[in-house]
Every structure is written in structure tokens, then in C-alpha cells.
Image (cartoon, rainbow, N blue to C red):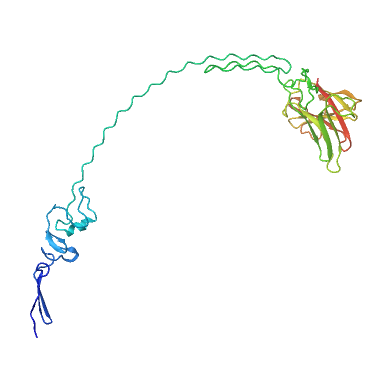
Length: 340
């Protein structure tokens, strides 16, 4: 049986459909993209139209902002993701944003403060008075330096008294007279140095600057040494010595030789050592108690370990006293050393 059916208008009379049995015929009276018709693919509409809610409608250039749910354009014209939302409203395709507000003007900068003037310079303090000069003399103390005035010139320091160990005001020719009984020589004529000892690995050497023990005849202060062999080690040398200028060269060209106050029961080898590698020596004979022995610098012999053959008295660094037989028992006491 054939039936004639009417289809009701759909979406504002978009089309009319006739159906008869299995036969259909659609009469399209609203082409896609036309005004008040369905939008075409990708929301396409004819010129002058815009797709809103899938229907092509007219829009005005510069019309009011769309009222789509994704947000209306702000007063500064900044649309959200609302460009697309605006196209769904009945307005323009995402209406043009409003003009941006005018920027505020920059405030005028404040005037700079008045520069303060520097304070007046203070007056200079009074100059300190000069120190009291120390009295010269044996071992005299240095004068006290004057204190500096406040902001003024420092006071002149007082003159120093005599300094250093002069060994009781001994003559300048004295190397050591042991008046102060210590290991330092007399500080006279620019000389300064200490007594010391030296020995080979197989020699037992005892040394001191003090009053010798009971076995000595002279009980006054001396630089003394006693020694003997050890069971092992080399036994080629042993002795004591003194520095004339803390190990530096000292000029003895104005002197001819040396005198030694010595107590020894065997002769002692006296050595003059120089800064240029020189070693020159001579014998000091044995004594009975303390006696003086003198040696001329010109009479000293060149030693085998010397690197120079002529004694340069401007380069003297040390005097040494060495044992003749370090492998046997030995001992001596030096009670004084003087230049002449």
C-alpha cells in the first residue's frame, strides 16, 4: 500500500521532505552557506554572512562584540579564546575589540636635595716633645722616645746608649774574654757571633761555655771541649769554633794575627776559615795550666780541603780549634781570644 507522508518544517523551514514507501525526495529550499541556512563545511558562509550556531547570518562591520559563552571582548579589546566564542553569537564574527586605555603620564621627578657643605677642618695638634736621651756607657739603655702629639709631629727619639755585649768594656781587639760567660763573642768593632761544636760520626764530643770541671787547673769561664771515640763511625775530626760576623765575611786586614789563652795537655790545630772556600791552619802548643799562644796569619798553612791557596783576610768568617787525634781522648779550654 502506498502512503503519502508530510514532514514538518525542520529548523525554521529549512527543507521539505516527501516520503512515499521506500522512495524519498528532498527538495532543498535553503542552500548551505546562504542567509539563515546551514553553515557549509568548516563554518563557511557566503559573502556578508557569518556562521553562528551552525546558521549563516548577516553581520555588521565593527558591530558589537559577540555574546558567546567563551567570554565577551574586554574593554581593552583583548578577546580570550573568545574569538571563536564570539562567532557563535548573533553578533559579528568575534567583534572588534575596544580601544586600549590611554597610558598614564609619568609623574614629574622631585627636585634634588641641597648638597651639604663639608665641616670645617680641625686644627693640627701640638707637636710632641723630644724624648729624653739615654746615657751612654757600658750596656747603657736606649733613650725613651718622645710621644707623638695629637695630630702633630712625633717627638724626636732620644739617643741610644751603648748596645750589645762589650764584655765589660773590653778593648776592640778582644774576640772573647768570657766576662759574661755565655756562648756569644764580644760585640766589638762590628763583630757578632756564637761559639759552636762539630765532630765526625764516630766521635763523642762534649762542649760548653762555662766554668770547667774539677779536672782543670784554671777554674775561670771558658769555651771547653772534651771527647773520645765511639765504637762505630768515622773519627777524622772534632772541635769547636766561633763566628766573627754571624757566618758572614769579616775584614781582618788591619790585624796581623791572633793570641789565644789556652789550657791543654796536647797541641790544638787552629784554623782560619774564609768565605771564598779557604782553610788555613797552624798549631797551638800544649800548655801547663792556662798559657797564651800566638799565631801570625802570614804563618798559617794552606789545608788540603782549601779551594784557594792564599789567605784573604778580608773574607774571614770563622776561627776553629780542632783535636790532633780525634780517635783518642782529648780536651782543651779556651779562656780568651784576642787580635793583634
